[in-house]
Length: 139
Image (cartoon, rainbow, N blue to C red):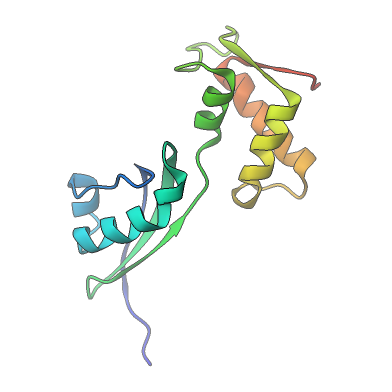
């Protein structure tokens, strides 16, 4: 069997269960209704989340896709109950606990470049600091 030739790899984000045909998908060059049906079926249990997806499009218009975990910034905004991060990281817009950071780190572990949960927590805490969110109970 010969390998399929990759035409394009795209990294996109859609609401879980809510992907629709549009310009972002049109530029990938795949069968949009087929992708949106497969994506929406695969993400229907993650309603309310934004789901990053990596789509590999092949020259014959077929495709594969890999779902990623919700971005840390969105999870931190939910945990801190805020709508957006600070425009300047020196400003404080909310707080999260170390337990909330640990929960987010455990969820994100598969997508982070960390060897253990403590390392993942440091990554998430750094994201929180950059967003102006204070992490209580962590150094």
